[in-house]
Image (cartoon, rainbow, N blue to C red; front, side):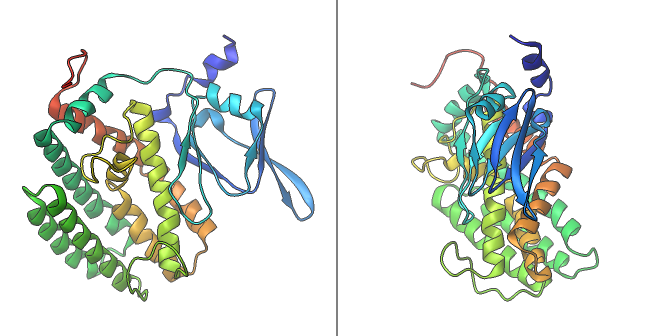
Length: 313
């Protein structure tokens, strides 16, 4: 293999910046670079993509790439995703140049087929979710906000409500908790809120939530890809739902980061593009990818890392 190939792979995906987003551009490769071309004030402008230091590339609407660029992504071991323009779930597309580790997949297979282990991991995820909310909300809200006192009460009530809960009972408590968080965020930022809407004629807060959530799903995709865990081995969102583990993992930080920032952005009058840029910066600054990977490793540690082929089928 070429020297350039080895140089590209010196930075492990888990140690890179998480996301880079490109839309309405043509991505191409020349020599040892990856870049895209956009039109600005009637002139064509070339912008470099830092492919040696990103874990995921999100390809937004109106984006195309050449075969040479796709090869460069493969060599750099980048997790690439196509995303829709309406805030939909990213469509994962990868061409990994190395095999994923097997021990985490084996652990999650055991968890998936053992109801008791699934329940333990679900409880772990819920506790980490609460801790993340209590850590990040004060960073978005002003420290003297009275909302923080209410948030503490809501989190404590949720912690008590989910203890020992499983299946649909757990999902019901989760839905109530999320509605409480929406109400708190709308009060904190004085945003008119009539409920969560995913499609159709969206108000600013709902539109921003959609765009922020697909970035969260992108991070979850990348974390699972790095550890080699199949996206269908869910622990909370249903054993038959396609890609349900992506939603389980994204929930570890989605309500902690995306939700309050979406309401703040709606209050400040930010557009989707500005909001998306701020979210990506915060994802990297807060090292959300590392947090997510470590949470998945903690989940695997409940059962014990599986180095053999002793599986439950």
